[in-house]
Image (tube, rainbow, N blue to C red; front, side, top):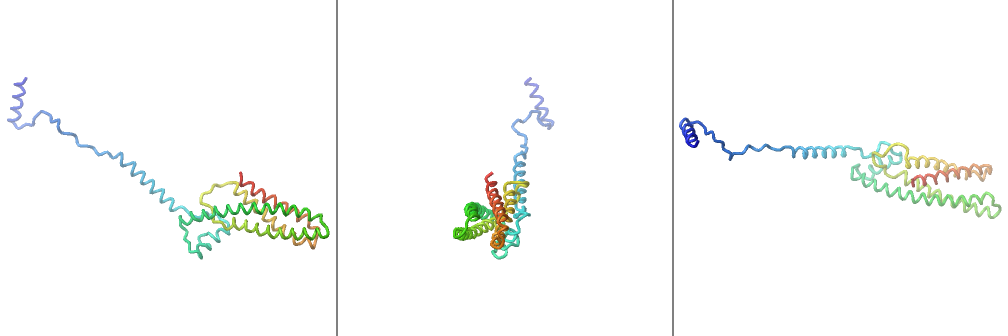
Length: 230
């Protein structure tokens, strides 16, 4: 066997043929693995798309109160006279302002509710009072009415002039929307109560209507506060 292998090698060398022996020292060229780079590129593309979509998202909701649009809209008083451009950073600050104003709105609402209760007690005594007691109770009732009107107006302005909410709030009936619907009721009742109060001295037959308007205002106002707790 050794002699045969030697002869074969000699003949191959003489004829210039390549050797039949395999060179096991060479390695196959490595194939580039592109599976790791593909997920990274996909993640970068996804993040880029999210950034573009966020930057293109509207900063103000389409539906706003007319008071909010007048103050905080694209051409509102804050933009025109305040020199504040509508940017994402600015909207974040405005949402913090909104949160603070609505907290104060809640506090003022509770103060106004307490005033309603006190005025209702005085008013019930006023209907049956006579003479000097009637005069003193009427003066007290009118003074309390002035204070309540101021606190009520302040409470309403804090809500009406607060910056608009964030874009993308849920639709449908919610406690916030119910609170707003009740606000329409007690605001109408508040106006009616004040108008009837100014006419009672001329026409005492308006007392029952004045009382009904006052009770309606109190009921709607109290319910508007309660629904925010649920």
